[in-house]
Length: 247
Image (cartoon, rainbow, N blue to C red; front, side, top):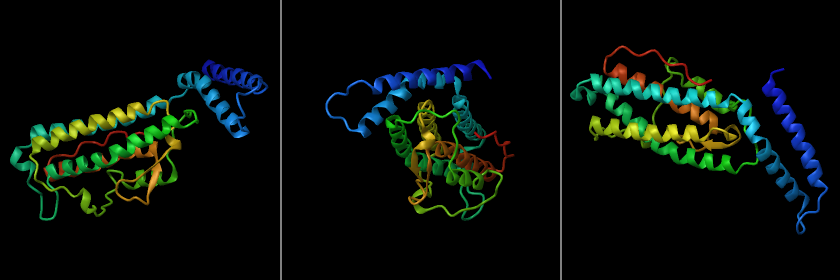
């Protein structure tokens, strides 16, 4: 057994011995058993959180999400630098999106999902549950993550609120994408040490569908990979190899 695991187990044992002593002390006022239990849970997790953060490999999972977001941004930046401005607004065929419209769609999606991410992070900070040793998607998030793989080829109809208008210039579209991407990356980094797989957020596309916050964070670069590939195909350039998305 590794030294970090032994340290983690020893810390838990010491904490519970301490809590058992605290439970025999008189409480202030007339606190109900439920209130006393809630206080003990918060005390336990605050006491063990430091050791838990040192032992768990969660930050590597979130770093993978950040790397995927940065990889998409790099792909689109290279396409923006390489493609003539007139070609950015040129769709490959009637009824298809131009490269600029593909990025504008991602901007609409980011604007819709950022408030949901902030709300989920706020709930995670208030949760008495401590961070896990490893984040896991729920079943809904896992199924969606599989279905929208860039190589899957699954085509879905975009709802009207997320259909780009095509009015913005390519430079404005890319500048807005970079700004929103930085906000999303900041949300991912802010999730470190929080129980984000115990907090549920709803889909910005369908209010009846929801998944845990960790799954939602991994779905963002997954969705962006699809439309980066669509933009490259619309520009008739060789598609980049998909990066290893967060597992």
